[in-house]
Length: 291
Image (tube, rainbow, N blue to C red; front, side, top):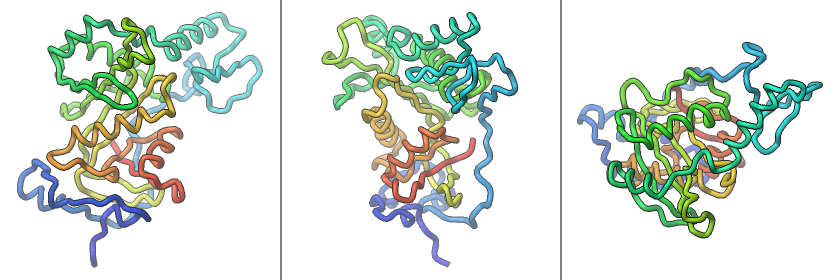
């Protein structure tokens, strides 16, 4: 029986020259993963290991919009939070979260910090629709940028995605990387208003599933663990730019195609991004993976 590639399932597959991609693995493993192989379809959706917040577990927990229309609850369309207008504590929590999530002050960096990070870390200048500096971090990085990124992930990113506070940022094996984009476009910001505009957590994975058919594939894929873009810049192409940068930085030689990007348990908006990135809106297919 002939093996199928994941690109065979798309009407307009992106050309993939697997022979020119260096996988940087042992010879035996390279032989196994140099081409994508398909196994028998799994009848169940990839098992989730990320636990999202369930308001039934803790009624006092912050709630993001899930379509609730209850007496005493207010839905902020700007930050996405649902809170009780009758409780001073909830009102104050919303005010604090709203200001941090929707404004740039919480994410700002100084020119002095930027200069220090450039001298300490891997960085590259990004010249595109969004001009700025891209940094690459991992669990072993020693930098104040790493500390700031971890705070953003815990207090903003995880809350917006509905993840529990105990979800780790880094993996135990040390394979996960964070791509952090600092926007410094003079047409958008003044000289002292640089800020962290996007964070992408990614890792190399070997097993993925083509959804919604749940067909299993093996090979070299970039697993997008979490991706976040500041609210003021969403739906403008920044997330796709970050995914393109990840495809280049995680490639050994030739840039990996879009069909090698997999998403870990995406939210509804995450699925839209995944489907749009593969340009398969007609069939609504995307690639997912399990942690």
